[in-house]
Image 1: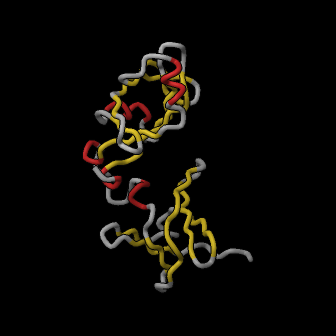
Image 2 (image 1 turned 90 degrees about the vertical axis):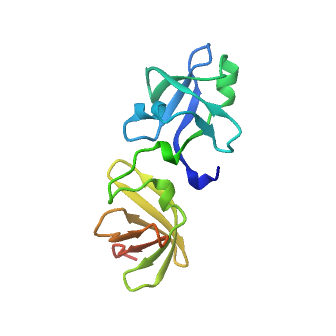
Length: 167
C-alpha cells in the first residue's frame, strides 16, 4: 500500500503507566475517532496496531496498542506516527481536505505565476495556514476562501491570492 493510500491520524507521545499503555495524540477532528479506523500502521508500514482507548490523559488519550505490553515497548514507540487506510476514513464535504492531500500541490497566484509547492499545513488555533516553498522563499498563506480561492486535487494545484506583505 502506498503512502497516498494512507493518512496520518495520530502520533505516540510516549508511554503512560507501566503496563504498556501509551499517550496518544490524535489528529482527528473528534480525537476518539482514531480508534474507529481499523488497525493503524506505522509510517513504514512494518507494524500494525489495533487501538483500544482507555481514558483521557493530559495532552491526549490513554490507549493500548495490540502487541505492546510493557513500558519499555511503549517507550520505544515514542514519536511514531500512526496511519489509517484512506478507505476507512469518512469522505469530506467539498470545501474540506485532508492535509496529506494538499502537501506537494503546486501553488500559483491568481495571474498564473508559480508561487511554489505546499510544504506543510499549520494550525495554531485560529485556522489553518499553508506553507508554500518557492522561488521567493517561504510564504505562509491563510487557508481561507479569500486567500485560497481554488483547490483542484485532480489537477494537483492550488490558486492562491496571498495577502500583500509589508516588505
